[in-house]
Image (tube, rainbow, N blue to C red; front, top):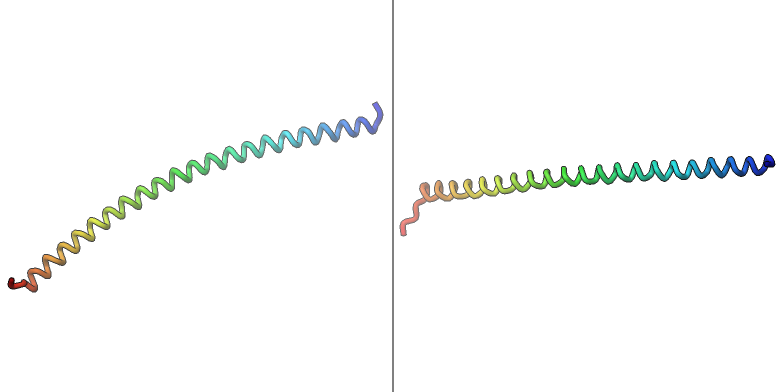
Length: 81
């Protein structure tokens, strides 16, 4: 084999190995990002559930407070009907 053909073969092998390695690394990186996305989605769902629970709790407390205010006002200012 001539020197030129050996160089061409060497460059081809290096480029091929580099391409295969890059593809495998990119696939691994993509898989990791997908996993992280799932974890983030699960965390987001948990935060949403917690926020909804807190909202319901606040709505209940608001109703109770409004009822208490209404009763207090009724005691302080009785309406003679």
